[in-house]
Length: 255
Image 1 (cartoon, rainbow, N blue to C red):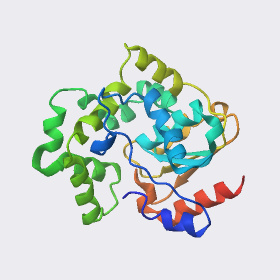
Image 2: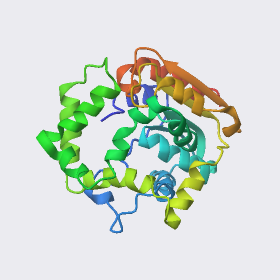
Image 3: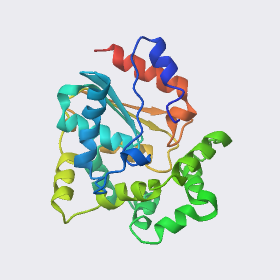
Image 4: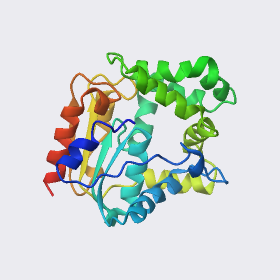
């Protein structure tokens, strides 16, 4: 539901548009081995393209979708015409920035909380009130549509979705296993496809200054453009859809 304001604009401009649900956010995509490592999530992107008969695409990701898109661009650059990262920058640069910036470490404290067994109960409590608080914290000036928040809560109420969502964060901080090592290596690699980075000026999850600091031209060998979107927080594509659509279409048209 979060891309509903982008699809019509992309289709109207002549782009075939594929919107996916990430691994684990529906029962049919929850792997039996509970593998949500970035190294595995990266393989989902070419698999989605294969299923749709698409050779190459402009890959756009927001939040964890940005992490997945980044990993796919590293692992299968031949399938990526371009890469757009929204709200979450180069992952290894972000991890390093959190060790230097106490304000950003505080903003990211929810990641630490997700490591503990009580996280599941905290998320379920009072009809997913914690998730709503996170959304409102991350985009403080946005009046979240009631039906959208209801849809988010309905999604998390499905069997296995909370466990899957937490696995992203728990496996994402794994420093001991081989899969964790490979995933960290992918996240520390430079990208060889043209990249656009977009962040909201009022993002209270990953601040605009940290986002810009973590998006360095040396890490994006085929070119990098970074834009800060005014009057937007973490969910910039929902808050300022016309601005985002125009930026995406202008970027795509440059190839």
